Length: 375
Image 1 (tube, helix red, strand yellow):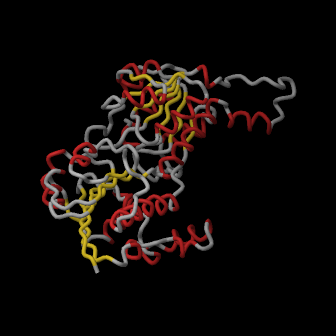
Image 2 (image 1 turned 45 degrees about the vertical axis):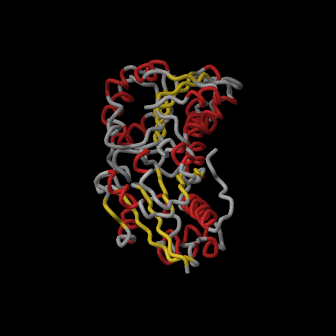
């Protein structure tokens, strides 16, 4: 049996979340999986099942400050392989003798990758692989792959559903129809927007924003973005324009937050940014609640600084039952849409994404073509 070493750098847990064995899932999740797919037990493949022909030394690097507390049980169940990462040198030491490097939303410096002496494959969970030094890997003869995330694609769908629901005033129209308010106004309803007339802005242009931009292009919208880096090739591909931070808030009729949450972005959107927005604008957040100063957002909605908000994520989750946002949701159904962080359609997206990643690793180890190689 071949012995291999795999190093995972993932502060969230998505790489391993979906490859737990059936017995490692809690009963509630098992029942949900079975309700949606009757033969779920046969489709859920654990890590040990996938690599049954290998003796795997798995090292999982994570930050004790940045790990995803919502997946605490996953971290607890994998305690023997967890290694706190306190500096980039911890990664450098681990990949010296690694066969495979698995990444999720992390950045590997070129000099660290060059320390690897027998690395055979690099795989990034997600197609926004900006943290992978692809040119260095190519120079070293190491193939690299980027796995498209079903999780992100369905979140993009959810974001568009929230946007269209608001712009087309679907909650208000439902009430309008229920109370037979159409009798004297058939064919007309105030407040509905033509999507193609609006400017859509993305704060962050990663793997959720990109499919959303494809839809926007089909609608012939004017699309702009801000990111910590510019993507000239993507600007041409998607027909989008880069604008500076403050201008994103000033110009956007619909502003979609798609930033990663880290020590640099926590609370990055506050009262100053919200005050720059149009009083008719729609603020959408399907990324992370703690990117926003939530009390400032509540005030901006209540006093009309912004026109409306559609939120899938919150500062504290589950959202406390006495949270002011729920009061706004009840008082202003035509202006506020809240959903309970359900857009990822978990747990099946976890299973599909994790399995696709690890089966691509298995292909590479067997000398078979990987499916998602980076050009």
